[in-house]
Length: 93
Image 1 (cartoon, one colour):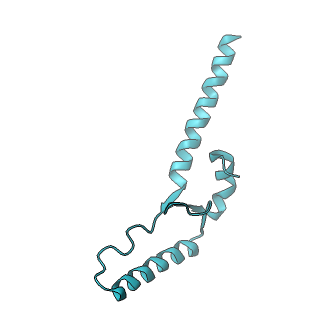
Image 2 (cartoon, helix red, strand yellow; image 1 turned 120 degrees about the vertical axis):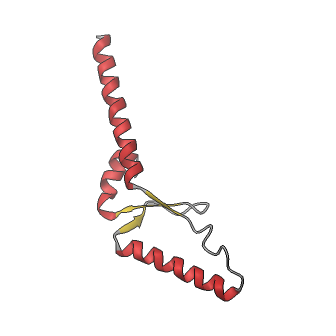
Image 3 (tube, rainbow, N blue to C red; image 1 turned 60 degrees about the horizontal axis):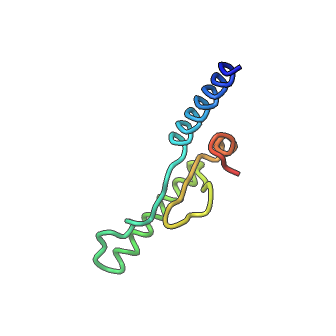
């Protein structure tokens, strides 16, 4: 009986490890923290922010969505078609 329990635990451990790897490979992090670094004028800062906005729009065009609300400058994104799998493997809603 103990051997079966150990085997089941090993299977669960392998599934958890596979899920962690899947999540790490498919979830991206976006941050705005350094978006204006190097700007010496307000105009340069505005241009840098516009460039960042274009990058976000490009991600949207490529099919990425936010997994949850951005918090403390961390946004987690994933391809929309992978969201259901994310919820199953990574403990999403």
